[in-house]
Each structure stands twice: as structure tokens, then as C-alpha cells.
Length: 254
Image 1 (spheres, rainbow, N blue to C red):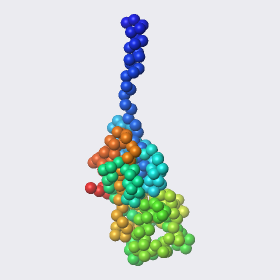
Image 2 (cartoon, rainbow, N blue to C red):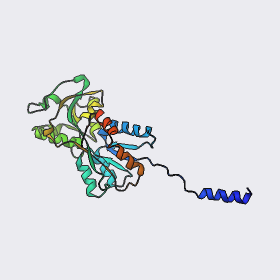
Image 3 (cartoon, rainbow, N blue to C red):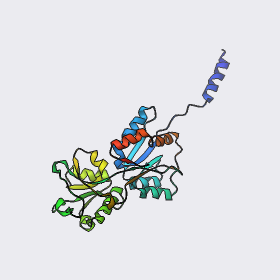
Image 4 (cartoon, rainbow, N blue to C red):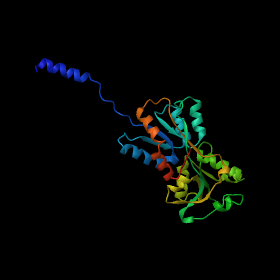
């Protein structure tokens, strides 16, 4: 082959379209989903896909970042309020929103102060906290776990007692951390959070009737055109993913 033909062939090869490179799915998710979603993402990557990029924080914090243009493909909230907020702003891909999981609200104490407390009309919060102790919760002004906690304490007639003694955290894991570190004698978190820690134990479970049902809605964001994100979103609704979620203590919703 002469030099002219070789040069022409090289130019033609350069003009050929490059193979498409799958982009990592970017998912914003409630802090309480950390361990379960990390395990599912690891499974997904082992099957040959790019590893999803996961960002965990309070649902409210993530929803506000999405509103401000954060480049996420998928969102999982720990309550319906913040998903409603994004839907009202037309930020969800139509028809993709699904209520996938549920959870329980529990009272935790440090592991070295294990006790069992009946969460009913006899619940003596003042005795539990002592003269100076505070109750660790996600900030009830915006954190879903804190909002559920406020509802439960209100139903039990304890909100006026509890409110001045709250240790408000930026998310539910921050609330649990305060109990783990001994900075609060008790806290209110999800059952799955307590199961993820070896430093706290569940002292009692709040009656489901004391608060709104805990629901985790998932959705794909309208601004995303990632084929990889669409596939990962489908995988999150698969039996394999459901097994991981239930293994971490979540209940799956149909």
C-alpha cells in the first residue's frame, strides 16, 4: 500500500465514531440508605457496569441541591414531602416516581446503657434523659426522621417536654452519632440506622399509629438522559436489590 493510500486510510479511521462510553449513574439518597445502596451499587459494578456515584445526606439537603441544579440522575428520599417538592417543580422524569421502601421509627440508647422502654402513655422521657441530657433527632424543621419523631412525640403528648431538650442534627445519622459518642443519652432514628451501628441498641419502637407511614420514594430526574442511570434505576426495583434492602431491615412496598 502506497503512502497516499495509507494516509487516506488513517484519516478514515479517525473519522469513525468512537464506541460509546457508559457514564456513571449519579444518585442522591437519604442518609439512612447508605449501607443498603452501597451494597447494591457494589453488586451492580461487579456485573460489569460503571460504579454508581452515591451521595448521602438529609433528603431536604439533597432536594435543595437538586433544585439548584446539582447534576444528579436519581433521587431517593426518606419521605414524600421532599419528592413532592421536586415533582411540583417538574424536576422528576414523568412516570418514574415509585414508593419503594418503608422503615420503623425507634428509640435508641448507648449499648452500655441497654434498657427496654414501652413507647406508650407511660413513657417517661424526663427520667430517660436525666436532668441535663438531650434527645438526639434529625432537625424536625426539615429532616424526615426528625419530622416523624415530632409527629410521634406529639401523638404521645410529649412534644412540649421534648422540644426544649432536643439535640438537632443535620440528618438521621448525625443524630445517631450523638448517641454513639455519648453526647446524648437517647435518640430517635430509623430501625435500619440502629441495625447499622454496634454502639447503640434499640430501647423501644414507636407505634406506627403515632406518625405518618415512613415511605421512601425513588425517582429519576427529568434532566438526566443517562442510559446507565435508567438501567441502574431498573435494577433498584429488581428482586436482587429487594433482597439487599430487606437484609438491611427495610420493608419493600408493592
